[in-house]
Figure 1 (tube, rainbow, N blue to C red):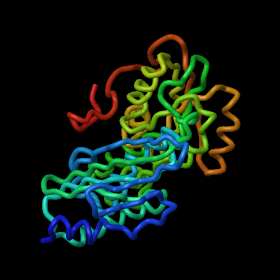
Figure 2 (figure 1 turned 60 degrees about the vertical axis):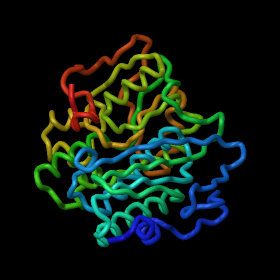
Figure 3 (figure 1 turned 60 degrees about the horizontal axis):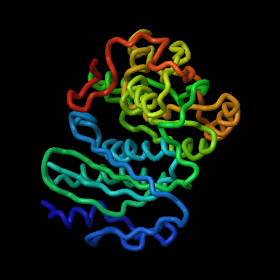
Length: 319
């Protein structure tokens, strides 16, 4: 059985980052000391992932580690912020499963390395499995993407494809465990669209990441911007294999209501669309127009019945 400090030292103390990482003092003291880039604004977000609510309790440890960081980094992507640092609070039932801890840490550290995110501190305690991750990034003062900038006449667009997270969860519940399946990959190993957020600075009028489902998160964006939207459901880009796995209508519902996609939902003035598509094409990422913002409140073009996205206190999509 590891003590808290032994566990932190063995699994969650990375090599000291260089001065270019902006870390004056990292893991091992009461606080970390950071040196943000002069002239940049700090973007900060926190998410908590709980076993049995946000991911299956028997999911692979490496996927849990990756996913816990990815869902927080997705918020930085939606702000157009460059990822810099993170803190992790890990609650464990026990501290004696070295193989699980090593795999969890490997998944977490691998995404840190891939995104240029330095783990600079955190906490470990005992309890039901839960991971809280605070991420910090930087964005120029005049360039953050926010939820409040959409205007009537702007185009409504989405990166990548939709419904993969919900499709992967459905397959997991059916007993599918082939992690190479594209839908399970989308669910257990989501990729935060950090590069896309950076590329769309100065082009997108508004942005939000799709974590709770397209319609639910679109509702948040519309409320912040004080506009409505006209959707074109036939234009929704659905994840690879989704129709084959779920059927045509359930796949459409997954695209509209399913959570855990972590794509970006964006507004664009029409004359910015071609440049936005060109920038994302350089990242091998499609951008699909799925509607238009309007002055009239509400969402039109789709029946607003049934599920309304992920509900954290019921643990499912709910009306």
